[in-house]
Amino acid sequence: MTLQTTTTEYTAVQAPGRLRLFTWRLKRALRSPRPWLMLSGVALWLFTYWLLTEGLRLPRFDKIPGPVVVLSEIFSRTPFQGISVFTEIYYDHILASCRRIFLAFAIATGVGVPLGLLMGWSLRFRAYTFPILETLRPIPVLAWVPIAILAFPGFEWPVIFLATLASLFVTTLNAMLGVQSIDDAYFRAAGCLGSSRWQVFRHVVVPGALPYVFTGLQISIGVAWFSLVAAEMVSGDLGLGYMIVDAYMNNVTVPMVIGMLTLGFVGWATSALVRAVGNAMMRWHMRALAIQGR
Amino acid sequence: MTLSTFPLGARPQGHPALGSLSLRSVSKVYDAGGIAVPAVQNCSIEVAPGEVCMIVGPSGCGKTTLLNAIAGFHPISSGEILMDGALLCGPGRPQADTGADRIVVFQNGALFPWKTLIENVAYGPMVQGTLPRRAAEDRARELLGEAGLADVAHRYPGEVSSGMARRAEIVRALINEPRVLLLDEPYRAMDALTKSIMHESLLALYDRTRVTIFFITHDIEEAIFLGDKVHVMTTRPCRLKQTIEVNLPRPRSYELLTSEEFRLLSEEAREAISEEAIKAFQSGEREA
Ligand SMILES: Nc1ncnc2c1ncn2[C@@H]1O[C@H](COP(=O)(O)OP(=O)(O)OP(=O)(O)O)[C@@H](O)[C@H]1O
Ligand SMILES: [Mg+2]
Image (cartoon, rainbow over the protein chains, first blue to last red):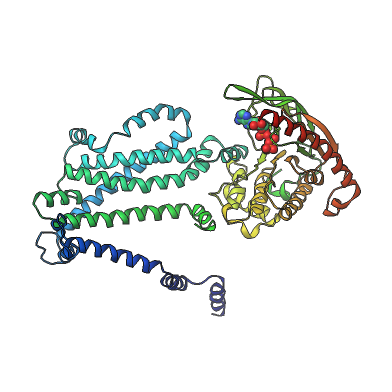
């Protein structure tokens, strides 16, 4: 019993508890101007949007649903135009897109990262692969649509293929640049310390390229959403991209805006997730940046 | 002989003295886009086992080139380099293999930033397979403690001062019991106070291990304070100009710096090197 009390006292002196640290951070954040600036920024945006569409009803803008209409529709139990947070189909669209993004991103990462690392590490492997990559990379995703539809069965796989493609190039290229960014001294040090070629790959190439790899993955997830929505607009039966064109075809404008906003938020959430995973895997990098005051 | 039996690589009694280096007429010509740049020419240096060999010379004279050739980072053009009588590189074998018997401590530091100090130090024995991972880390903790780095052993290199990082890097080298430690201006960017702390810690490690040290520097006081021999090099292409024997007793302390002997040795070295520095400066002016 006594032993327990001493331990608690000791840890309390050592470092503040999680809860105390959290409340302290929250208080400090509320005292700084940043959250208030963010709030007023959002308010200003919404106000301008409202002014252009619903307030002044300027020509051309009057066709666009304003914030009041959109908000009341989103949270309506019986939406006029078919989509709100209370309709099941809304979640079907989100889920369909998220599932595709997950698959596309997983494939692009699983193939692109090892491919890029190998390309950066082995001159010979780079010589084999680089010209092909550089030729395929500039081809826009939409140019791949016919081939995707011909080559893959159904609705699902062509769309996933298209979303994978663009992110694959981004991921590969960044992983390769990541390896090239590693200071030669680390390779030399590893050599001095008696590493085999495989150990150099495992202990120098992979961790050294990681900052670039994660920068690449951040871009890659954005690109994946971009190509996914483009693909869903061309061919598909479900998904946020499909929801937007479908609304347009049926002359209902509010679901278009709802679809766009949803894409914004879901896209933000996915890239935040990628960033969080990256930060967790690169504690050394984050701490070094923090010490430099960034 | 196992790694954990002796403090920081100290050699057992009667262990044959290892770590001699012979550089015989070494030359190195760089090919800079079709233009031949002779960096080292006919350079011969003998380093005895356990000697602290200091190399001083004007900027850009080819000191790093020489060290990299010993380490096996690049080939030489002619001549030969031997360690303990065995050929590292020479005729028919232009480039030495890199290996844990000659470990470099780099000018800008090359601790892996993604590994903690302990993981960095444990890295050598772990990849060479001389110790299993856990044992290597225990040993690393012990050695870091001996070097006064116990408190920061679990930090990443980016989180510790440059002086601590450099000390940890020397520990990372010494844990492998190298025959030769190659240092390329390791304290170049440090302030005088940090430098003197670094000197003390290096001398302490040397007195314990008696590892052969090949140390490049610009700093004449540093060269004489640490070294057994100070080799003054000519301007590029680099050759041995003059060797100054430093017969000061060990272990050395900072009182030495104010002694008459020390002053005289410094004078001698300064004269030799300033001659070369002026030559380098003038030839630089001509080329510009
Ligand atoms: N890869 C290279 N290709 C061509 N020339 C080179 C190369 N590396 C070095 N040199 C030249 O060789 C000469 C010697 O370089 P080195 O780095 O060995 O000098 P140093 O004595 O270590 O100089 P410092 O005191 O500045 O560290 C320099 O003039 C440099 O410009
Ligand atoms: Mg140099």
